[in-house]
Image (tube, rainbow, N blue to C red):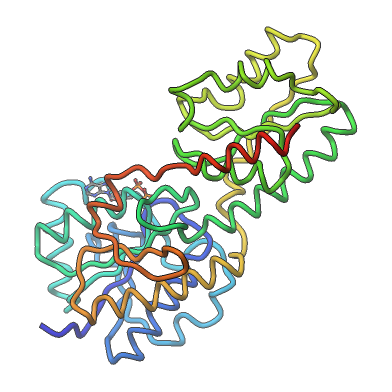
Length: 325
Ligand code: ADP
């Protein structure tokens, strides 16, 4: 059956570049003669019927805006079969033949279940600052968040070096170390403490063994938010106890990492992926996430994107170690 009308939604944690993706999906669909209906507040909008037809003008002047104009939400009801049945009924009433879902791991899990249950074509776009989806080199929002972290750490470094302090800076990542590791390299930090390494070694002990300071009089350690690492506060407490001579401080960057105007890389990535989502639907693809590998668009089945853990590049860890001597 030819697709005449698509629904588009953003779900889960917001990420800079989602608007650029909404714009690309909308314009690319209209260019191909497909109608677009915008669904507000993620899956919730499919249940409450908060749906608006979109024309090209609806996505004017949004490529540079952070957040998502469609709003996002976490929707418990969609996790039940009854909830998804209501969502499906809404799609039928609205004449929506296919969905483009922009979101993270949870949103794409929901998309996979929904697609299988009702045999609906769904294409996903990886929208998350955490970069934790398998099958794509990078996700929409990751580059912007990385740049935000770099700017913040640059500023903290000024005060850290003025006072000879040891700073533990906690960054987001949801049990995933990409932001911490690459943020550390980009900002010239001394170390990154990431959950991927936690089971193998005590990273803090190693750091202490190597001597925090050596020739330096201030140090910055990026810590991925994670139960495994104990977060920046837990690590700082440990160091304070064992090394009372250090002037230890903690900074938790928090939600500022999610905001801001998307970087050029994220805008381009979102634009390419948004257009690719429509190409995929026209090709008869379904239940795939659009990914990018070696600068080429690829289709990654939902099951692969969600279930597999994306590995950290160990070369990067080594580079960080070498460059922080
Ligand atoms: P993210 O997409 O950023 O990972 P969440 O994990 O909060 O964010 O997921 C967003 C939404 O996706 C949830 O609120 C829910 O509506 C839907 N979702 C997540 N997991 C499932 C699931 N197992 N079944 C159905 N829907 C799900």
